[in-house]
Image (cartoon, rainbow, N blue to C red; front, side):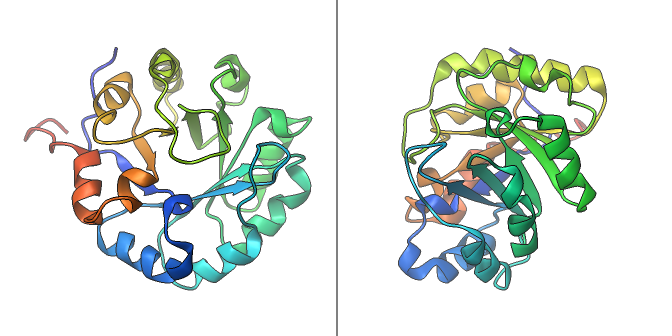
Length: 229
């Protein structure tokens, strides 16, 4: 394992675990609690076995907060809908290699619109899937559960994948966020950070807590020692 990042991780609560009957209040609450990004999971019932929401909800939330929108598209084919989600207010668009025929072209399309482009690796998707696009990605997200449902248990077998990607990113020298999504909680965060992740997506660990600020602080862990910047 690699040493933990020197800076506290970016925390991106997943709106999938929020109370949709009062979604605007939920977003305001996690922003006040110190969230860095808002993570939005878009599922189509085809690429993954669930359906969530589309561009209209993202557009509605965009008016309520200045938090960066980290949008995970679990849809296929993904290319025809990229512009719709960008126009709705997404800041980051994360896609799966399996969701279209030409990953490089899809990432180019996202970046051409001035947005950050990311690749998502399912548990069975090898790290080699991103090896040839490291020059144009802004984020890589490791799924530590199988995508499609919230509230699943963390898969510790994904830790070596996180560590391998950390090494690839560091060797390339580009600022690429290394996100982890799936079963992230105060109980699993230590090995995730030790493996090299710097961005944590958490759903029930935040929105399922009675104190959002305390939940976010627990995910961040202790502050780095003075002089260790």
